[in-house]
Length: 119
Image 1 (cartoon, one colour):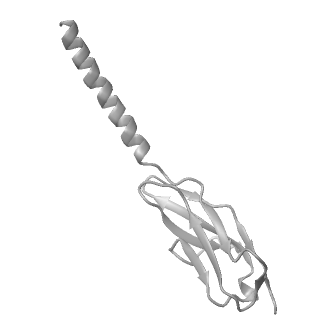
Image 2 (image 1 turned 120 degrees about the vertical axis):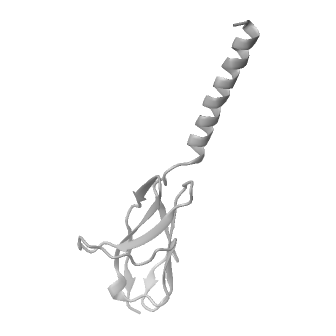
Image 3 (image 1 turned 180 degrees about the horizontal axis):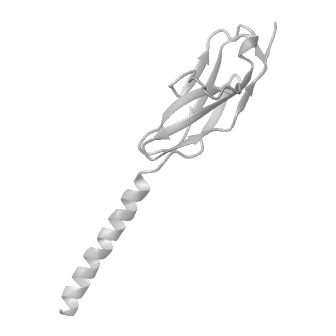
């Protein structure tokens, strides 16, 4: 093997490793989802409230919202990035969380507490 052939073969091998690393970093499981609430001020019964879940993931994550209630068979409230209460009630008070999931993994957000006050 000549020096030129060695360099060419080594360069191809390095390029293959580099491409594998790039592809690995292009696809990732969801990061810890962040949750936000709008409005962020006092929540009054009858008002509109939106909870938003977001996470960095590739491929894109699918989102699911839950309310913490001690039930081991939790049912999803929404399978969208946003959970919208068009007319929130005091019974909606409680802790909520979302999950972000793709084929590479699933992460659960921290809880966000909603305290609905009467008018």
